[in-house]
Amino acid sequence: MRNVRAMVNRRWARPAASGMLIVASLIVGALVGGGPVADGLMIGAAIVAGSPIVVSAARALGVKVVGIDLLVSVAAIGAVIVGNYWEAAAVTFLFAIGHALESATLNKTRSALAELVAVAPDVAIALRDGVQVEVPAASVAPGETVLVKNGAQVPVDGVVIGGTGAIDEATITGESIPAGKGAGDTVYAGTVSAGGFIQVRATGVGSDTTLARIIHRVEEAQDAKAATQAFMDRFSAWYTPAIIVLAVLVGILTGDVVLALTLLVIGCPGALVISIPVSIVAGIGRGAKDGVLVKGGEYLETSAKISAVTLDKTGTLTEGRPRLTDVIVLDSHVQRSELLRLAARAEAGSEHPLARPIVDAAVAENLGPIVVPHEVVPVVGKGITAVVEGRRLVIGNLSLLAGEGVGELERAALTADRLGRAGKTPMLVAVDGRVAGVIAVADRIREDAAQMVAGLHDAGVSTVIMLTGDQPAVASAVADAVGVDLVRAGLLPEDKVDVVAQLQADGHIVAMVGDGVNDAPALATADIGVAMGAAGSAVAIETADIALMGDSLRKLPEAISLARRTVRTMRQNIVIALLTVALLLAGVLFGGVTMAIGMLVHEASVLVVIGNAMRLLRRKRRVVESSTSALLPQPVN
Image 1 (cartoon, rainbow, N blue to C red):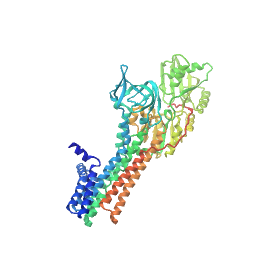
Image 2: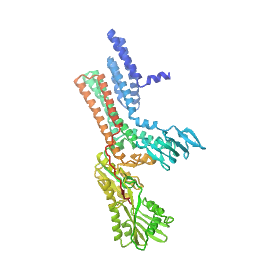
Image 3: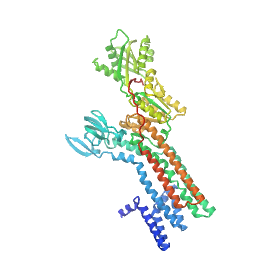
Image 4: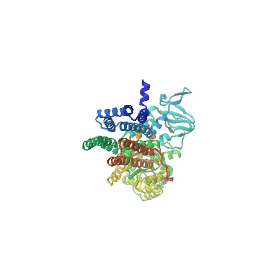
């Protein structure tokens, strides 16, 4: 019995059975000229194809929803009552065919999610008591060692503890070129070894992996409604009852029941209802396959309107790994090594990104143990003060030293200006109230930073602004290298919020890209907050409006371009749906459109809408190719 029920419920079973009954009715009619047998077969065809429609309409009415199924049910039952059996059978048969095709094609728009689920690893080779054991991937314990051989799937999130290899991370980051992996590197479940052999210490297993979080995020995003979709839902809630009322009025005024039933069929908003969600599902799915996670339809719509992009410098336009480049002594009583040693000891107590390269350089030059100083006071956006070996150090920008009462700053200011114009971040060092020297660090601009800015312009973004706490001269050097439209330097975190708010007040839809804690207020203020390199951050995947899984800056213009294409497809689909109804209405008024023709055209329009949305699943060719690489400054932010 269960097998029979399953067969009946198969996607094409009912349309096929209904179609055969219609053919049989036509054959009988041709042989004997109609009669009760032919009519019975035609009614049977309508019942086979139409019974699920009536059941669905009744269930919808039970929750006070007047839907398309109700329109089709009333039209088909009415056609049977007035003896128009062919129209009843044709309408229900075509509607069933349309549903089957719609279901098949809609599944393809969710193919991205299906592909993500398909790459979830099933088994792992775990190293237990020195023996390789094949176990279910979900049974691997955090901290356990797994082996990944050439061609094998990485079964867990983890850190490479031995061996080298190349990992294809396209399922996570969208990048098709395998990434080299060695000791200390992070790998993700669901990626595939393209060569080599690595040992991995598991840090995330099963639902606690980046892949699982991506799947969860895509599922939620594809079901989240866009603002336009919410409007269309409200419109449909009034539109469908209005069609029923219109058909009743037409039937009463004209006395033509068939005309009233035909109006019910041609008024079906099938393509209109599906026009937006099918586009959202396809657009978000395409993004997920490219390593771009969008939070939902609402955020996709907003992203399509982005006219200004604000970019943090450190870790976004630059690599975020500054190096010490200059140690310039300005006090004849201080040696270079002494200046660097004192500065390193002071910075050893700082968590600022500029501190690490100074400490590393002192260690590399064997300047003694770099221990934490007794006292360190950070001054946000300016530098630090510290007490080292009983001497008071002030390290930071000109404003900090002037505020601390350090005199004779003219020569230090000229040196800092020269270093800044050379693309380096200078830090003035004062010891016991006297300027001792200037230390400079530099960061490397990401190779694809200029390419990203050009891509944003190509995608229709009118204004690209770099926000940084760095000095104006240094910021300008970076801005010139990457081609941003505007640069705002010397900003504190609250200043970045003010810039974003001012852009919004000027009518811009603003996206903010940042990766630092000090960017959090600006990210929250912007219309769209973008997190980069989110693959290793569960928080970023869950909270960012747009999460770029890899470190490639090219993904940002691709995300905006995809959002614009998705919204453009939504609008095209709405036009197709409304135009279809208008043409059918004209056909009814001027004659020639029957219930069967109306249903055929409606189902065709549904398939056209789905097919139009499926174009979003195709990858758009990248057209911008350029690169910039140079040693440039690191901000004090």
